[in-house]
Length: 298
Ligand code: NCD
Image 1: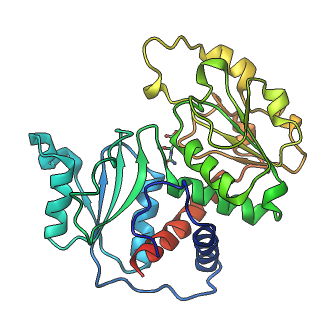
Image 2: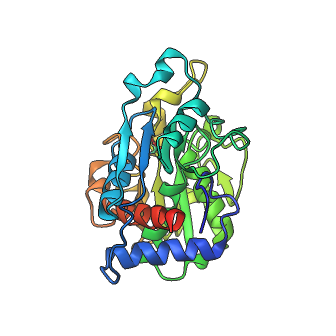
């Protein structure tokens, strides 16, 4: 059992194994769906989301868990209420779990002393910090496609500096002991901090013999004004297309956390091609989020 899911850093490996096993069992209908109908949860999304929001909502619905969305446009935080007060008020009403997406990378820091004891938090993406449930569903998808996780060559290409998905994924790779994780980005997007693996600015080098290629979205909204960036140059050197995918193994699988900028960081032929596991990730997201909700509430 875990109290919160705010980070994948230090997630015990037995918890990781349980989450993947339970998510897989839910997917393969090898287990009944438990009912959490006596519990109450809320979702607080301060940033846009399609996959994460809908899959948490569907996951809760499969578990008979009322997950009530707070419409952030009309929340009292618009009147200046502090995030911690919102959480305390929801808890006072009987909400036991909040799924939170927030643009602030530090939103969950310093909460612990004021956080109601019985309130569970799930980080559904906090700024440029972490996105634990995405990394977990990515690992589940990789495990489903490939058997020996530790020996795999995994490559991630894109905006490593701003990617919360990559931070959470690196921590999981450290726990699993993935030997070959290569992070590929142009010099301006090299990560400030490396948690696991190695970096390169060469797509050819980074993709060489990869079993798994994860492409990240060009996050236009996170490009600060002083970051000189040319989409054309990025496409020339870092786009995943039929030609550059050939650097990887012929049976490599392609992942992307979404949303995709079609024909920008990845071409349509790859997005929609036979090696793409992108919609499998989306499908697995529902089952992984069921496993996460169960692990916290059980
Ligand atoms: C990611 C996110 O919002 O962190 N998407 C997602 O949750 N599936 C990645 C992104 O926005 O680029």
